[in-house]
Length: 456
Image 1 (cartoon, rainbow, N blue to C red):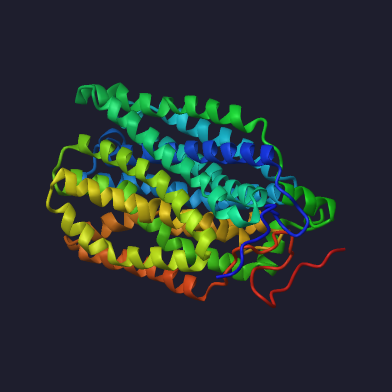
Image 2: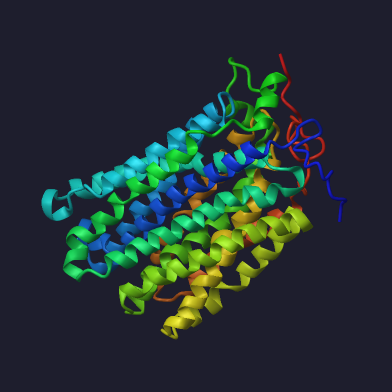
């Protein structure tokens, strides 16, 4: 184990921590991903519980659920597009501008979903409008988490990057808790009221989260690493694009991020979304047991995110990520067996473990690991491109899992699918470089011999 960095908390060889900037960045990173995950959780829960009846009523139940999950998945298709668009500005203008813009885009799209007409009112136009809103959600989310973890990694003390950057995912877990809590409250209504007005209240409530997030973000400062890089002329020249520079010089890092995250994202949404549908529609359990489980899982997940980040500061990014991936390799088959007990407490334990390891454990390590893989000129673009392209594939996990289940009548193909994807992440982590403590002002990727972009 390498020696601890200087206790003066150097960000790099030449920068020191501004505690006020770090505190603001921590809060801003948390509240933004709170909104993002709030949006995704309330949508995923609606897709599992009500959207098949409200927007796809003419389809048989199994196909209706598939269609609901398909609209859920298209949000992930838009994520890399959002990452491409916003990372251009994030690496040139700064992280703060992007984080404010994406906040309003996601919040507006979610609020509008609560106003949409259903299939019974306007026919096929209803699912079309729903899909459009979902695309806008995903477009904004494509730069949100990448911006948050880059900002916090660049603002944190060198020996505590994992701890502080993981706060972004504490915010994500808090979003899960709030989303589940709102659904718990709405499901106190009679079923017909949930179908008519209750689900709308869930989505309209996003305006409160958006306003709260903006209040914290409006006073956000730029990261000291970005400001220092800018003063040294280490930002991408106007005649070039950060995306182009990232593809040319950071393609190894982009590939690593894609492979590290594809299995993590699939497992995350398996426990957040697919399990809810499975216990309701395949095990015929009451739908109102789902939100409390997601709420409890989110509470445990907040501690899991920080714990994973702290452990990665102590023992390194690679070993902790390898351990988490190995655990996830072993979980899917026992998880299905335990779900089939139809015991609420046992199923709750499965959901909690899923949230600890799959939903927040993986990203708790990734929070500092991914930004540290890239050079200073294209860090935002590299993280966003790698992470969101993998999300576009792994985010269809609930749809693919439901399709495999419908086609075979067995959960075994779903288990194999999940094991293969997390296996890819495990092998990638084994061969990835250790990045803990690297100088973030370096223009080189975190691998000896990778070229750096030349200055002009």
